[in-house]
Length: 136
Image 1 (tube, rainbow, N blue to C red):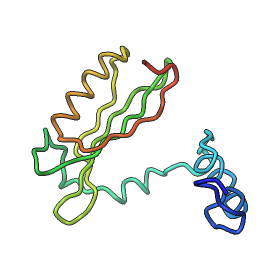
Image 2: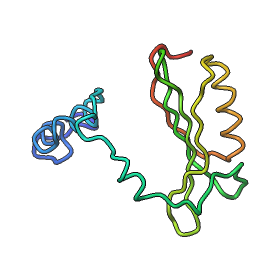
Image 3: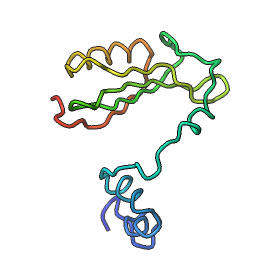
Image 4: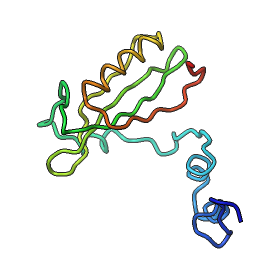
């Protein structure tokens, strides 16, 4: 058996996941394919129920504190690049420290701004989608 392969009886096998996951979850999490999530959109009421207006965004984060970032690369006329940075607070809750929607369309300028933010917020790890027409 190859390294990383699972028998069909193994709950981590592709076939076992195909049988127990919804089609949407299987396509996205196992096969890594896109799907439209409009069937179960986030409702405004759900989002507002989890807010805390006493918390605000911050201007930076200094060591020994570290944060994590996500980048959703936008492309085309109606999609925008979005950067978010989060860290755990003193109560071990995830807190949004910074979020930016880029109106700037030049990917090289976006990368420069994002790099500055990663340093400013002492980002330990970042993750991004692959972006259509990725810059090499």
